[in-house]
Length: 266
Image (cartoon, rainbow, N blue to C red; front, side, top):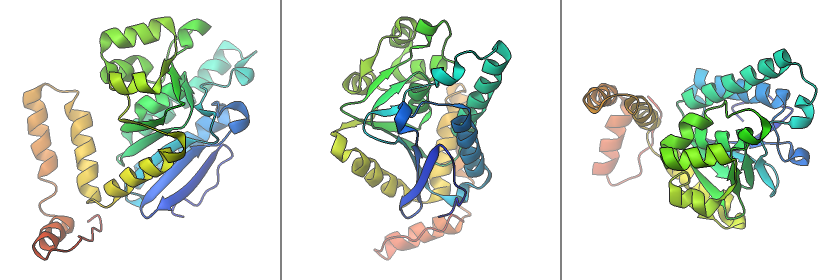
């Protein structure tokens, strides 16, 4: 186990070499986010940002079969002062920012309901597979607030502006199949097959050159915020970091020697 710290609200395991699985672990409350989960998530993502060589792919999922994450824990929030609410939300904001900044590819394994902040977690993954039983919603508008962990930005980038406005302004739920058709999800799986499907993809990514996967993610994320001409220049800057690496030499040698490359991340 490379991340050896234990967390009150998260379960960490390594289902395959170079792969970390983070499980939101409050199944008794549908994995709802309380302050401690926010702190735990922030700590994990900060650790991965600070040392991206720890793993080559990360899976984010929820405990149990009912829910991925039901959003903010409204029982804990009941009776909070405005200042307490905003202080808690700042922890959530920082956690999502750290997740988005994580250079390691992140796959969502959405095993059940992903409402509110849970939907925002799914959107913050690099891509996601979901169970056929999963349901999604950004319900904040029905509570007198609005998404504040990337929902109003990541949803339109995933499904388009008009579809996102409908989801955001109505607060109505949608199915995994709809999420697939709209472009939010990459694959919908039977519940029993979800974890194996995600793990197979994670292992495929983890078997590739880790410097390459991190540079690809960096190039896509940064380039999408630029005009095309600037993004193409940025892509070349990212590319030029790779030819001098040992992994590039190993990849070419393995191809010519007709063997599987052994990448070391250097």
